[in-house]
Image (cartoon, rainbow, N blue to C red; front, side):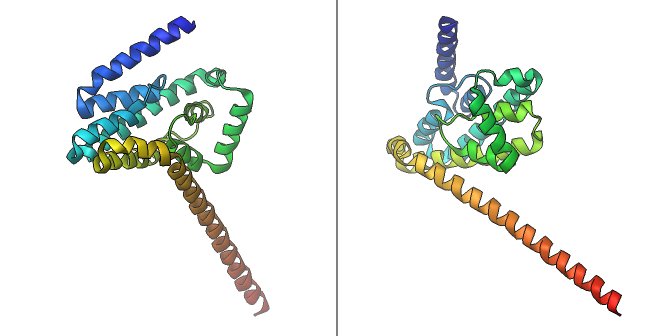
Length: 218
């Protein structure tokens, strides 16, 4: 089985090198394969750096191609997992399964969004599989992936367009911190928004109760 897995991975790497020559269309295919199947070495991030460095004026097209390919690939893996049921989670440890399920139950779409921003080797596949197995809303799932991956690829692409070949070193050094910083900001934003909503509901309830009390007294 290990020999077969290695051969399959080598085949995907060859496909990646072949698709690289097709620019934005090739990047779309690489992002799709990377999200739907086994992650490719370097993945779409590395290809995005190469293309954006070579053609800075086309960076927006490259970001769009990578994001669209990734979203479609994630949806393919989502539906595969949904059809397979809990068997899709067997390759992950029970501890990881329970932790990711807890995160999705607690933070809902925010957990998928944050996970999609973080770079490899963060295990995003288990979030996709869990969302599929437990039938998370496909629309909200796709939107979360689109926003998260769109942000990630935009950052990578524009850094590559601006800094050229040095972008790879900058991303290797600082992207984990940037990703975690963005994740913290997103969590703080959604938690703050939920607290504000609860406070507003509480104020509305108090106002309603006060109005009913006045009516009874009059």
